[in-house]
Length: 272
Ligand SMILES: C[S@@+](CC[C@H](N)C(=O)[O-])C[C@H]1O[C@@H](n2cnc3c(N)ncnc32)[C@H](O)[C@@H]1O
Image (cartoon, rainbow, N blue to C red):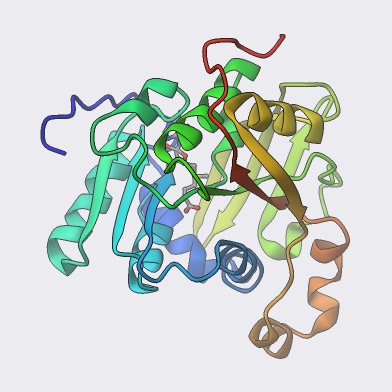
């Protein structure tokens, strides 16, 4: 992929690389609910090629490669995230490729080495950073363009449109979510997360289930399924069922699984 002109931007994630990397261990819900549920939804990747949009520090890209994917590419617009992921790759030599690109621009899905070659595209906590419906559709269009013609799947962890704004709801999981009008399309929201000694402050945008589904369909996806996260057996044993009650009653994120259908007319944006 050395011929690809990379595009990276200044991002709110540039300064939180270490905290993100640490968060999988420091926040038990990430491993026991998120990773458990996301990897289940992705299924067996043995012999498959995977593109991880908004890969961040490369956590899931490395895991999917270790799980047997033959080719894994992580794409992120944050230079700091991609630099970190590449440095780790240099040290560990897992064979994961990383690319700096804006995944909300459908052109990212048409890049050589990316277009039409993947069996699975993933995106964990990336769609909530679409600030417009066009960007939301752009992420989906990139995913669709990167997938093979038939049978390709897109698995994303997105913000639950009905997440709780009760400041105490997710506190025991190390998070607090807020938004002025979470039910209005594109409303800005804020995530505060406590990761070890660091406090992570991240701005996101709220999108309804209908907006997600519209963006997916407009990009050429069908058979869309919403999946509620579950807790792993290990997580239940380690923390007890009561610990997970709030999260499972109203999780902050849901999984979306979509099947690539025929390519849609990507030029037409969804109505704003
Ligand atoms: C909340 S982090 C999640 C990182 C990783 N998926 C994980 O689960 O650990 C969101 C990531 O999405 C990336 N991102 C946000 N908007 C993006 C865009 N338009 N194109 C590519 N990456 C983007 C950010 O730079 C950040 O690394």
